[in-house]
Image (cartoon, rainbow, N blue to C red; front, side):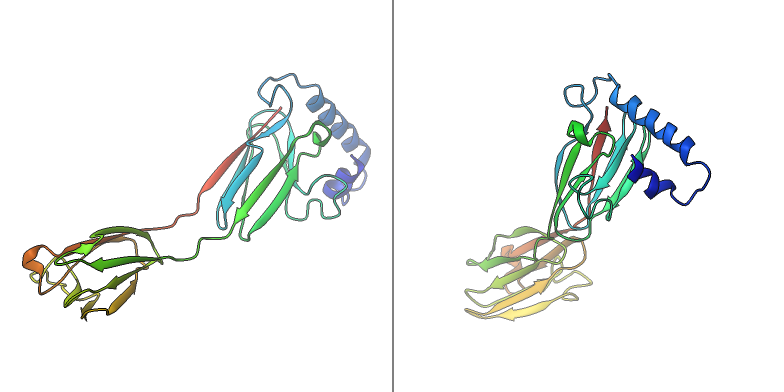
Length: 230
């Protein structure tokens, strides 16, 4: 406990002994807690292990007891507390956005000996993908595709066609986004960066129903909740 006093209260003179008594009572109170809300009645982070993506947020919620959320494998870790070291009481929360890939270990200082630890595994954001669309007779295959913002669609032609944005020739914004003529074996690729539903068609075969859609979804960071209980 001296390490904690030094880190959090070392700059305040004349009250160290009072704080020491308070911290001792805090520690004993946590250790003697009989609340059954933890893992088998023991202090715990739930869930203990997380899988997230770069840009996601982890939010720790103090459900019961008094804890810390401290980065590192334990008090003996030479880098303990360098990323975060937050006191978390009942009703309090602590959030952190993870901006780089890797594995981050953390623990609760008062309950380290009771196994109150956790890990956050952060994966890199998936690389943009390219979805293939081909022409078959007078149709696009597949005619309707769903992608994420930043992904691309690549059309490959088996005949004489166009890939023209819009619902049809009567659309006032026809061809505003793209209007590409393709012959046999030619390709056209377009990257979609803005979420929405994009309609397109083939000018020569519009009357035959040669149309398609691209549904683009935004990739939104998520927040994962971890409960701290005693």
